[in-house]
Amino acid sequence: MMEGELSKQLVKDLEEWCSQKYGRKGEACEALGISRQTLSNWFAYRQNLTGEQALKLLKFLKKHRRGKLPEGVPAELSWA
Image: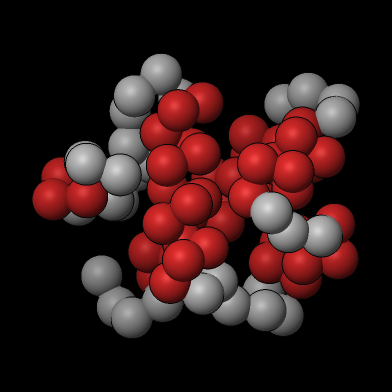
């Protein structure tokens, strides 16, 4: 994967998860400690994730996908 592709995949997976049920954007913002504006900026690729945000997002997605890592995430990050 090229630099930044993994972050984009994480954001894409989050956007897909949020679109499945009303209220999930708020749930994600609260869990990740971000504002709705930051979430909107991520979805529009106007703002990049920090390293800390990427790790929080990875853990969040893994939790909400019943332990499965998002597609494209290397197995080495399974500890997240």
